[in-house]
Amino acid sequence: MRVFLFITVLLFGLNSNAQKIDCSSQTNEYQEFLNVNNFAEAFTSWEFVKNKCPKQSELIYTDGFKIVQYKIENAKDEEEKEAFVRQLMKLYDQYYKYFPQSIEDYTIYKALALIDNSIDADNEIYNLLDSGFNSSLDKVTSANAIYYYFKLLTEKNQNGDSAVSDDKVVATYTSLSNQIAILLEKNPSEKDSYSAAKRAINALADKFLTCDVLTKYYESKQVQNQDNVAWLQASLTVMSEKCSATPIFLYIAEKFYALKVSPESANYLATASLKNRKFDDAKRLFLAAAELEQNSSEKANKYYNLATGLYSSDKPKAKELLLKSLEFNPKLGKSYLFLAQLYANSAAECAKTEFEKKAVYYLAIETIKKAAIADQILETNVAMFVKDFSKESLSAVDISKAKMNGKTVVIGCWINEKITLSK
Image 1 (tube, helix red, strand yellow):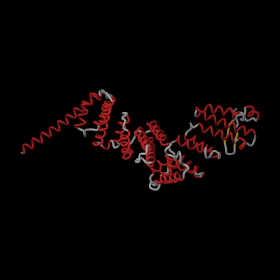
Image 2 (cartoon, rainbow, N blue to C red):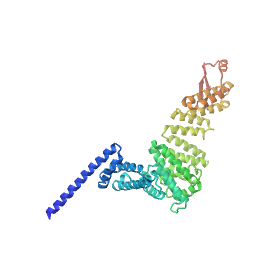
Image 3 (cartoon, rainbow, N blue to C red):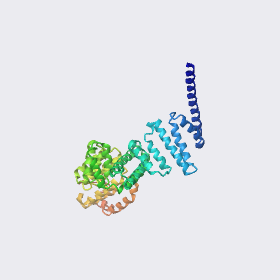
């Protein structure tokens, strides 16, 4: 009896080792075919390894996706093509079974297998995407999956599907918009595809997501999410275009800013304050957004927008902000352009004599020339303004007659600049 058991164990061990050896040789065989892009010949030995040694390596699956996709693309007819697509989907199931941490959003990949290979199965695709987005949204990186999910979701809602309520559409749009924002920040190289997905879901949502619908939804969810920073941020992103003047937008913006002081939260609260005619608060918060901004180019643009917007009538402050914008982006030629216009518009206000008035225009011309140096795109605009300002500026005759060749003129008032005249 002991001899029988020993032989049984020995044979089992030998068989197990033989299978491992066979799997290794079969793996080497199919990978040699893959190295020369011979997917057809790789299929048989790869399938053996996939069936006999499913836990051996993740390469079984990552290689398998390429091999099966080749089979799909070279199927003899639609029936065979779908059969291979179904095999690809089972491969995703098997990959998740043995290596779950590597492909938590496997149902998304199964849905994409149907989408990318033009299999007509919208209900199945929707159910797979719905499962994947509900369980693993933070793992989803496919712009196409995001678009397709929202497309099918809105179609179901419009067709009266009771499982897809208005609230579900708003909640999904909110979470998808937030995910796209995260992906854009993490993967700037994929900006085009994520931006396209954002535009596409915006277009789908445009008619459905009215301000009334959004307001109703966010008012019903505000209390339970008032400490949820991600939800507050996503909500403001969704509402900013259509509902930034509403009380709920202001409420959520205040909550977001209180929990997370950042350029974005300051900007949202500044926008809400502006729409509610709280101009002092808006100025303070827009300035805070600019000061908190870490990106030099964005910082410069924020200062420029403030100078030409809320502070355009406050010339000293506008000048200060324009100079700040140029400090952070010396190539922002439009800042010189606007500053020159401020000077020209203040000639009568800041000059005591006719000569000084013309000197202000002289300063405006010298300033506006810097715009063309900073940004060549502005050359046409600069030439137009120089021609216009020259009519009011000091001429060579004016300078010589006043015996001011090569001398410096001090311009007071808010302008507070010195200008050295031509010799």
